[in-house]
Length: 191
Image (cartoon, rainbow, N blue to C red; front, side):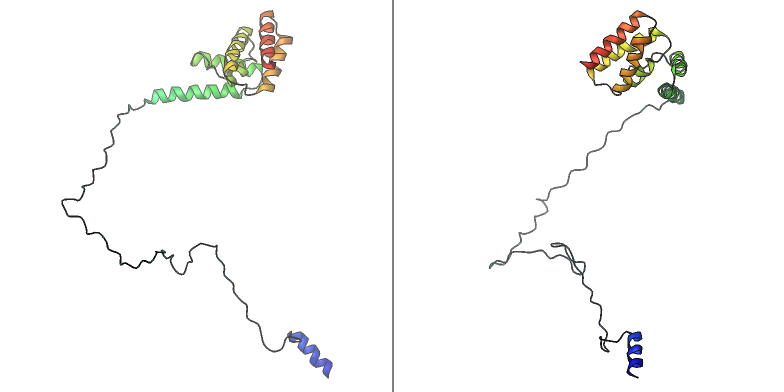
């Protein structure tokens, strides 16, 4: 019989605990120095033996009249013409096409189209780096000269790619002038 009572007590989870249940204790914490959410932070004021005397309010004649806020100057801006915007968008599209071109033929076509529609190519490192792959060696020599000027002012953006293209020109260019220009720029990069 005792075994049955013991088994029933185990099932109910009362063995060793007694008949009372424990309540969960909720503990709240806060950061030191942070005001509690229940009551607003109180200002601490040093106590003094003398009562605080507030100065009398200024007389109406003494009051300063606030200055009006400064007026903003109106700017007249000429409305941009839609043809100007369209031309600028077309120029950016052609330049993006040149920079994204892959292979000598695609780069040559993109550069020719840009020159035909816009004019001279911008003298920037990424553009000149692409022009090193152009089919016409006169364009390549112009790009090498432009790169010499640009690299004198700032470091190369894509040094490994520039070195690779210059080495290819140094070895495989048809004209000796192009080979010498590529070799000179490559030596300048190493220095």
